[in-house]
Image 1 (cartoon, one colour):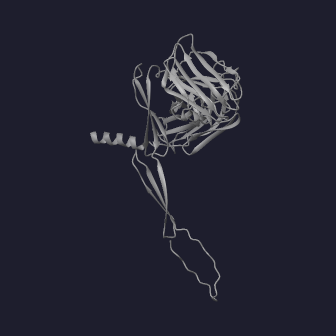
Image 2 (tube, rainbow, N blue to C red):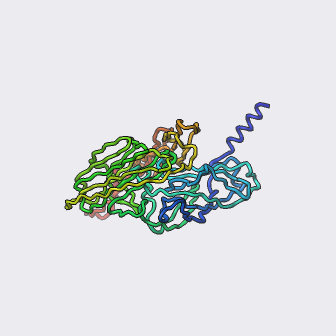
Amino acid sequence: MIPIILFTLWAAVVSAAQVSGIFTGFSNLVWQNGANYYKALPGFPSWLATLDWSIQGSKYKAGDTFDLNMPCVFKFTTNDQTVELKVNNDAYATCTLYSGEIVTAYSQLQCTISDLVNAQTDVSGTVTVPLAFNVGGSANEVDIEDANCYTAGQNTVTFTDGDHKISIDVNFNSGPTAGGINPDQIIYSSRVIPTLNKLQHYLVAGNCPNGYSSGTLAFTVSNTNLDCSSFHAQVTSQLNSWYYPENSQDFNFQTSCSANTFTVTYSNIPAGLRPFIDILGSTTSASGGTPVTYTNNYYCVGDRTLHRNSRSVTWGSYKNADSGSNGNAVVLTTKTWTGTTTRVTTLPYNTNPGNTKTIEVDVPIPTTTITKTWTGTNTFTTTKTATPGGTATVEVDVPTPATTITKTWTGTDTTTTTHTA
């Protein structure tokens, strides 16, 4: 009896597969104001994405898994951790909501087909998920990548289910995250990173078209703490439609950081570059919100006037979408694996405050291509595989190139001579 049970369990495990093609269309994308936002910007909650799906028992079976990769989506703006693909009250698949935030440049629906699916199943429907896009916010490499995703005006938003792409056109407004400011004087923003349980602060100096003689940028907080291991002080040559850097580079800044203040001083920044700083800080549930003072004083080249364009702002309190993340540290680990796509997994953890949550990002094994010539007439490709942690090699052997030189001579016949390389 025992061998039969073991065989049954083994068969159930190996029968499940990673599949694709369940999400068949992108039928709607509309903005619903999630607070008192001054207009519909892509980074403001909530954009309601309505997706078409279809499951046939002839193609898929219970236990099969599939993912919807959502590039440039910052987070899902819901308290739910899962969403179901349902017809009436029957759930044919359950999808875990993974928010990329500043950990990965995409978010994901990580789905598993339910036991309701059998060979006769043929169901379809729509599912709506609320989300916010990432249009930048720091010098973090994820933010820089996502700052280049969209521009103001008409855009095409594309999600991928395996090799299958679903797209929709949408119009995005431009403008700074903080309404009512003059971006030529100051740019600032703040947003919560729920997975990390952090607040991300961002500040850009006023615009000096001819460059900066000197200046100071600083954050000062009172009822929260700054994470001095996370700050960036950079310059950028290009801000996007929402005034976030599309690129960044180091500069000779003088920095000082404490639990309550992060200060940067600079001088002699050339024309075409604009200094900015960012840092992570703790969140608060205090009813009074989070007061932040943004210090922004500078001299422009050719102008003896000290421009004092500082601001003090109180950001409203925020409730994490992921109720299990409050009070827990987050560790990000990246590993290579033998698959062809990137997968993200949150490892099991104790949700009580004081424990650590680990997010594991598995990326495909890197591949190096080497091209060589040989004496044959055909092209051959050889792949040398590698185990996780190594680098695979693709060797391409191509025929030695030949050059034809035509010359005249005093004879009466045509002759051909080949010189091998």
